[in-house]
Image (cartoon, rainbow, N blue to C red):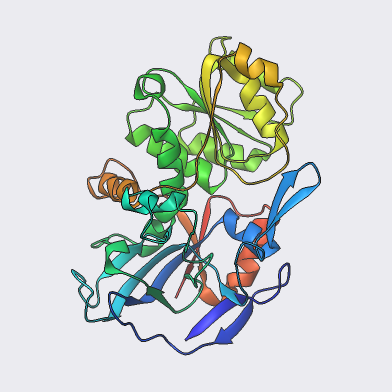
Length: 352
């Protein structure tokens, strides 16, 4: 099979030819139809994360081995199945749940494989969707998408699932009756606006440092937008909420600047949900966390159950599929580079 691999961190992806896997047991082999290019892929391509205080998390030390086929937002059509695979029809298109755990620990057994201490995520610890085929360990991780557009559905596996799970960390009585703040107007931010609406949300004020992305947020339905580089960004946020602090912030960036602005915008007792991996150290005063009675919650992707719920929102028409930009699979390295440079608006998807 043809695949585009990270063979050396920070270097362009390399096209390689590997033997097409033959599924055994519960495994299912899919012909890739669409593979989203996610900002998380940039961190994998870079080989780690900035932890702040001069520290860095090394992915090679965490067990990520090269060459690696990235891609954790994948839709494919079933072409071959192991003898123990169940409920799969050859030729049908399926969305892949990529956030696999060990499958045996108490966390996995509770349905939260995305929190497993021994992750086996597709496109991270196992080969993913930047290839013309992908091998999925079990049919239980495949969701039938029917006649939906594979390119539009692929991002649901990460940008959709992650933001849906982040919203689920908030009290519905809060986000359905008051505006919240979304930090970041990239692919996740635009998806978050739409999902919030589908969940009956009041709406969101969106912050970014790119005016073109802020315009995209307005088109997606943002109540208001703020450029985070403005000196009076905090005042603008509050002005957009009748000069009041806000009850909740979902930070899809995760930089010292974004999280400082988000924390400062919170009301007493407000909630900050941290999602983004931009990196750095937390800028908050420890005393103010207690004084504000702030809740700071981390969110890492979402569960298989949540992905099923989210796909149902799409199938029932409550959630409009996200508009995406499609690129040939052969342009995987160029698209990743463009995303790294900030020139991609919305979500980029590789199609084959």
